[in-house]
Image 1 (cartoon, rainbow, N blue to C red):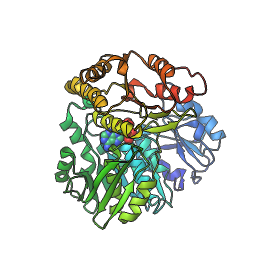
Image 2 (image 1 turned 90 degrees about the horizontal axis):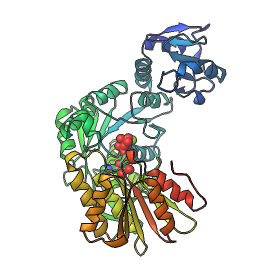
Image 3 (image 1 turned 135 degrees about the horizontal axis):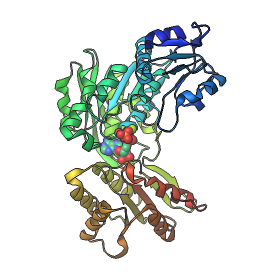
Amino acid sequence: MIALSLAEIASVTGGQTHDIPDTSVQVTGQVVRDSREAGPGSLFVAFAGERADGHDFAAAVVEAGAVAVLASRPVGVPAIVVDDVQRALGALARHVVERLGATLVALTGSAGKTSTKDLIAQVLRTKAPTVFTPGSLNNEIGLPLTALSATEETRFLVLEMGARGIGHIRYLADLTPPKIGLVLNVGTAHIGEFGGREQIAQAKGELVEGLPEDGTAVLNADDPLVRAMASRTKARVLLFGESDEADVRAENVRLTGNGQPSFSLHTPTGCSEVTMRLYGEHHVSNALAAAAVAHELGMSADEIATALSEAGSLSRWRMEVTERPDGVTIVNDAYNANPESMRAALRALAAMGKGRRTWAVLGQMAELGDEALAEHDAVGRLAVRLNVSKLVAVGGREASWLQLGAYNEGSWGEESVHVSDAQSAVDLLRSQLRPGDVVLVKASRSVGLERVAQALVEGAEGEVAVR
Ligand SMILES: Nc1ncnc2c1ncn2[C@@H]1O[C@H](COP(=O)(O)OP(=O)(O)OP(=O)(O)O)[C@@H](O)[C@H]1O
Ligand SMILES: [Mg+2]
């Protein structure tokens, strides 16, 4: 964090100082919520969680070098005591970003936020120091903590914003008001909590409503609900996508033999070829979004294309490819799934597995409402059309729909099987995998299929317990 005195922090958060002999002492280190991360010069934020109460660690963090604790009650060591720790953290983040010289970029959407945020960061940091959300810490606590990790050197601050309801994005965008606001897509994630796609669009669009006149709304031209958000902002609108209308476009999109997307990137200032290191064509949209942001921040098509072609996967379980010593390839895409990314992952599997035996180990796509039966059926059929050698559908009713779709498309006998749980899938694969096979593992987050991928990755060397 930029250096701030305890007196200043108390004033910004409306807190009372307790057990602080000298309030001119500065916080010069990180603002942390995990006591194990506290170090010299840090500020520890004490949350009372379900399992542990941060206040219990106050003495330990000061011992580790923390300057003070942001707390909701006196803790016997230097503390700034506030009524509501979360609000205080937010107020501190807002104060700090106002003082930073950095340009704030915020993004939201139903799917691909983390993947895109990681791409944006990897492109922008070739230009200037960039701080970005670690992993998927996109809520009212992770967002301010990320913002507070910026320093005087930071030029770009890239923040992922997540929403589970109306008003959430507005709250986050008020804490850290972006100059550039990017909306990726409106899908079905958390549709139950929202009520419908229109409500999801309403919630995601809050990001562009708060943008300043000299800001930019970066919108997906290929998604009608996102495209329509142009009317909700006073900022300039920049469109990305494969549509002709898009300012930043991809042409000639194809998958390489490895399942990696390749395309011609067109920006308003030029054109350049991109071949990604990431797998699956859903990353084209993510890459175009990143390119649009980078273009807006003054990068040329060549600079953007080079950085996109070098960008790797920074977050786990997203098309994570492991080559086992015995020549089996495991593709772990178990972080999450929706119909679009299922199709993209299957196409990538087919491309990677040319001339090899391919396995699709798939589980439920959650939150599809009335569409669930048709979507699972369609994915099962697509696996057969793409000539995937073996489909292993894992789980309950939805998995049986996947398998039935494959069966009805002509995949009989042992080509498609339905197993009830992760352990059965691991047992089956362990007994049948042969050198040279390629295995894709994918389902919605709640299914937890990363256990299967991990067991298979480590299973080459020894036994791994499946929880
Ligand atoms: N552009 C996209 N369109 C559709 N699906 C995508 C896209 N990009 C990624 N995905 C899928 O969504 C999953 C989650 O990706 P990612 O973590 O980037 O999304 P997220 O929006 O950050 O998710 P979360 O809401 O959990 O933070 C990936 O495993 C992939 O299957
Ligand atoms: Mg995320």
